[in-house]
Image 1 (cartoon, rainbow, N blue to C red):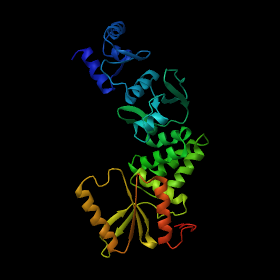
Image 2 (cartoon, rainbow, N blue to C red):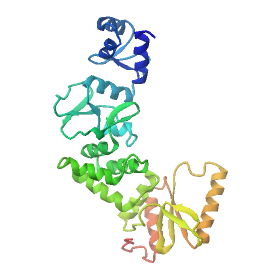
Image 3 (cartoon, rainbow, N blue to C red):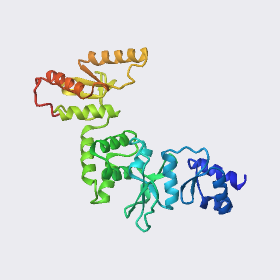
Length: 311
């Protein structure tokens, strides 16, 4: 395989991005590469960094081009890293980078680069083929730029997907010391520690709305077992002392007749153990949670204007 073929293979591994330095290390003359770039439709992304013909201009390409232009030991960070980890919706512009404090922060178009003295070896990882900050460090940096709701969802998603733990985030937060976002991240960690593990953003939303209405359920998913100890169901939201379950239905619920039959069998098994099941769907919104709260208060014996169950 010749140097041009090796450069093409390298570009494919880098989301269609190559650099003049990489071409030179493969034995290609820089001027020859520049002439090929000018005549062959290569896209100049940064000085010495090119997108190969046919490469897709997406978040991954923008991120890896920024890292290659910024030089060694630079990492994609904050919102861009969170998007690459799948913790927030993609926001490719500008690309967030961090570089060690002993280097000058590069000035690159469409890139927001910050120097930091707190990078550790374990802060570096790979996501979608791009060198990024680890999920734990990403969440600490995201706290500077995200609001409470977005940060809470990002942390919960990372924990749900087992990318990190609340304890690991709390430890890294403490090690970083006083910095912007510390108080916000601490507040989010305390909220999530009190809620327990959930399976979806919708469940977390409903749980938060019930807590705001003074109806805090038991933390996390509640395993319901029969008298013989066999698992009957994992309940989304539960008030075990009153045998009340709240099931949260997403948009894709009951897509097939089999889904509906399984759901009926599950709900019958829950009812057979003396539990009351209430349902709320993704389309219900705040109004649906208001109705749900009224029904819960009646079942909990609090009346429609009760002060709420505090767990």
